[in-house]
Image (cartoon, rainbow, N blue to C red; front, side, top):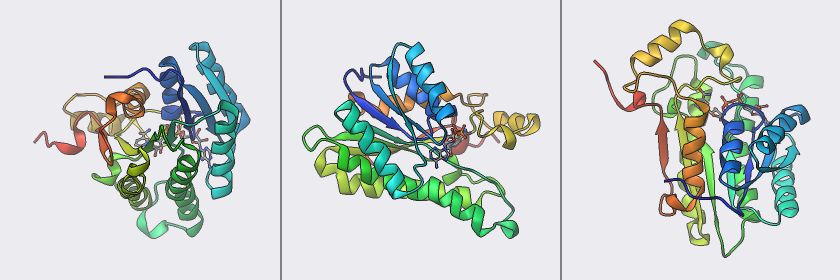
Length: 253
Ligand SMILES: NC(=O)c1ccc[n+]([C@@H]2O[C@H](COP(=O)([O-])OP(=O)(O)OC[C@H]3O[C@@H](n4cnc5c(N)ncnc54)[C@H](O)[C@@H]3O)[C@@H](O)[C@H]2O)c1
């Protein structure tokens, strides 16, 4: 079901680690040129090297994309250097879990800036850069926390539910221009970002309530992003693909 992405250009925010890095490698293997965004030059360079090792082409875009200016600068630079933009993935996040009573304005603001606002700035910039005739595909990384919210995740779950709403509303706005907007909603996936939030007991409980009996991998998520990026999903729009082995939609009793 995965289409060739030959000749396409894809922007991925937060591609220095985890799911974003895996998506960069997977899309590059399908032929796309990847705009590799992350906060720090060293993170970006690691993914650029991994994309090139996989035989792909990458353009480094070290930039904080939590602001409108930062996101727009990075996206337009890619479109200018690569000559076009076809795929945009809003993946970057900064995540903290806090008990309700301990949520602080500083942590909430930072999470909202990168997890929520930057998704809107990303869609806005991508829509500006995408060709009026060819259109494009925008993929937002939500979470199953939007439908099955863990403890201490009021800000995170709220943001990810918001990302689902943004996805649907942006699809309504951009469909007439041939721009599709979809989301993936991963369950628990071991990454650099989640290492500090996971432990053996928690993983075992998650696996026990997952019909497929394992945690997700970054490649599981990257492959679904590739599907949404390419022509095989050409009539999929305003949708959310849950990528959690069935955990959020079932009860194993
Ligand atoms: N891993 C999981 O279990 C899981 C589950 C559900 C959803 N998600 C979502 O998937 C996405 C990726 O998660 P991950 O686990 O791979 O994360 P990660 O922490 O491993 O990687 C995120 C990357 O985003 C970058 N980043 C943070 N702020 C940025 C900014 N302002 N500008 C540019 N880059 C920035 C970080 O430097 C980091 O490299 C996130 O949206 C996350 O909420 C992850």
